[in-house]
Amino acid sequence: QVQLVESGGGLVQAGGSLRLSCATSGRTFSTYHMGWFRQAPGKEREFVAAISWSGVNTYYADSVKGRFTISREDGKNTVYLQMNTLKPEDTAIYYCAVRGPFSDSDDDPSAYDYWGQGTQVTVSS
Image (cartoon, rainbow, N blue to C red):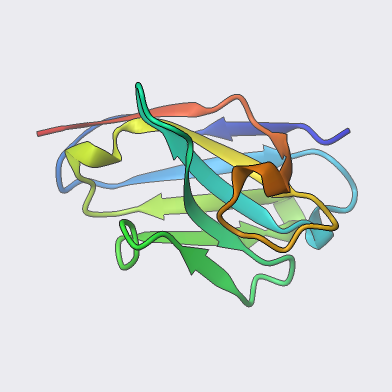
């Protein structure tokens, strides 16, 4: 069983920045392909960013490309999401997740086996 705990959410003005963290249990974190998703009220959960187990490959939704950066620190079993130039439409609960070992999709939530409880990000205009 893998446990994930997100932190770093909060209230920020448009144009501001936040850095989300996702601490993950398990001795095999360095083998995990990790993703960030978000869900706004009344909307479906949507893909934000993903990072390969090696950290070499990263993937982003078009809506956040150039503003958000995903990274990982294997020594701390943690994945990060640096969010810059935030917009009101970025307001959502943000979740990190571990992709299943037999999946190859980055943006399909069903490809991910373990999820955190989420952290709220609110961007005011």
